[in-house]
Amino acid sequence: QVQLVESGGGLVQTEGSLRLSCAASGRTFSAYVMGWFRQAPGKEREFVAAISKTGARIVYSDSVRGRFTISRDNAKNTVCLQMSRLKLEDTAVYYCAARFDPSGGYYFLRQSDYNYWGQGTQVTVSS
Image (cartoon, rainbow, N blue to C red; front, side):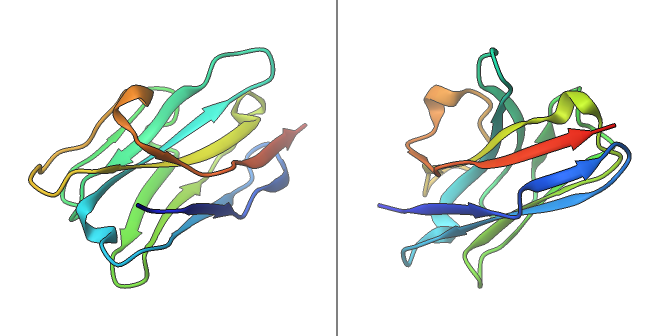
């Protein structure tokens, strides 16, 4: 089992940057596929980015590709989301998610694929 705690959210102006971090408890972080999702007011939660266990495979949603970068440090049990050139529509609560997948080598895109979730961190982009 793993517990996830996000940090790094806040208020930023358009075209600004923020770095979100997700700290995971437990001894087997390297066996988890990690993902970031977000939920804007009045909208359903959506996929943002995911990274395989080793970091060799990464995928982004179309809306953030080229602006966001996901990374992980298995030695520190953390996954980060570097967000640049932020837009108003990036305003949302951002969630870190994990799926225990010791034998796989890829990432997952669906919320239902993930077993564990953080509490979320608010990102607000203003003009």
